[in-house]
Image (cartoon, rainbow over all chains, first blue to last red; front, side, top):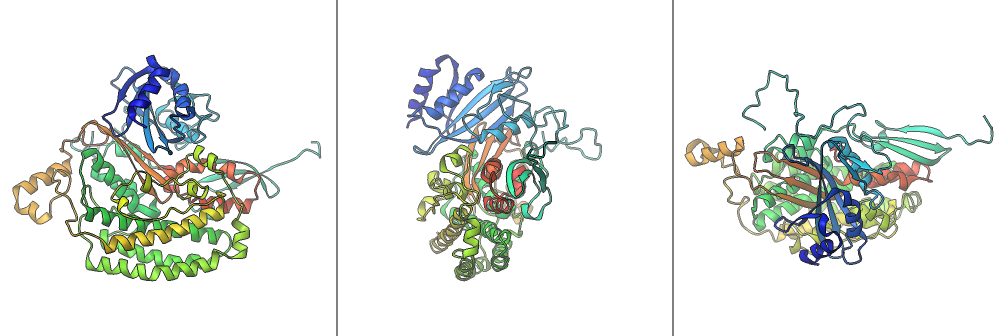
Length: 164
Length: 392
């Protein structure tokens, strides 16, 4: 299975919702519109040719300077052809809502909870969307870039030359 | 209350229960001995590695990876080094690759030994555990000889190793290869065809292949369900393509199959180590990448260029390509992935660990539902849930 064949398949089905196809990366990377993410993942999984049956990982990312700052990144794997694909989609900070894929992949359950926990991305339709690794009463999403790693009021450490 | 109405008991298993072998909690709803449902609470030892990694230069992240699956730290370390090498486009020579394979397979052996002997302990057979733990100790002596540390090894560097295998290290590996088969046979004699052990494990906590794939299982747990997915074969890294080895498969995906698959993998790993040690090519233990591999300390004190590189590496003033990579290795528990996004800065912009335990542990309620409590303990230990890897 070639990258171009996968791209063609996707474009035929979701022409306007495919924003960017990047083949320069280590695996085919497709950026898609977030409202159709569920259909795209389902198409990738259930299409007899594409057959991406394994959700390797799902994670969030935060680019504070971009128009759509929050991202969700899916890595899928087709075991038969040994082909991997990366799907990216971006959301706004005010309305970070996206459809869950737990109905397609049971494994997405905790992955989505983790992404919610750290980035505040709300997966609509998730059966049990609550924090997983952090305490329940945490009132912010710690992996967002504006949250410093350490207490910024500390005076005993000068990190000017070390760290971002 | 109507006396006919059923009442369930709620039982806390964990967070510090000796049988969970780590800190995580299961709130079981039980009907007598039967498990009706369970709710898992995790995160007790969450240390925010992904956040910390965004503030550390690349070479300092190795110490974070140690603390994920601490039963097989070298795999995590070397997997991370290979991820960075993939990002930088550094190609390592065969000697480094073979050295890495030897260490990674040793780590796999120790990890599987712990898991399998713990299954024995949880089913009431402590003896086997004591037998193999002595051998695990010897592997730790090898780690100590190679890297100076035992549990959290911080092994290797980006671009190779800090030092070559010493004659002592090679002697210790050879001794281990000689002694291990005998111990392993003895261990198998205790458990593999033991009637009590088989009765306790066959048909316990089974999962079908479809469900295992759907739940994102990988590694021995997936192979026990009969799916021949192994990253070492699918996406060979570190010259695994040079070696011939078998991928053991189970059929039922139950506790006994998981035990057998792990046991057979230990034998295969021993063969791989033996082959790698016999055929290890000559060469240097590091590749020539002055931008990422620290120069020898004598040179730093006496040569200007070495001093400059040393300073640049430590301060993180090295140009790093702006791109993203996903690299995965076959960890002891399955596909251990590193998704690294670099924006050219001294630290990763984003680093996500695909921690196999975190992915597959969520299938536990489904695997233990309808079974009895003592079987649930066995299922949990046969899945090899390592709290460090679970919480990240």
